[in-house]
Image (tube, rainbow, N blue to C red; front, side, top):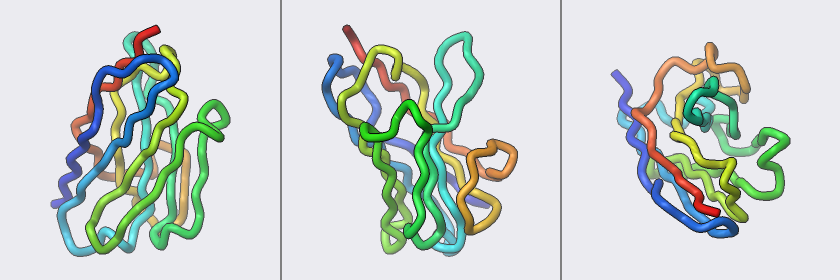
Length: 124
């Protein structure tokens, strides 16, 4: 069983930065792509960013390009999401997820393990 534990969320003013972390259990972390999703109140869960198993390929949603950066440290079984220039519309619960394959994907159904989420609130 794989467990994913997010941390690093909190309250920040617009224009500020946060770095989310997601620590994964298990020995096969480096074999799978990882992704970040978010869900705002009353809205569907949406894709934020993903990274391939090796870390060599990354992809961001259009709304976050240039502001959010995904990275991973396979030696530490951890994936990160650096968020800069935060906006009030970035307010949501952020979830990390483990892909079922090594390649990147934006589709939630191609992720088989999910963390419990961490709240990010951006004040105006």
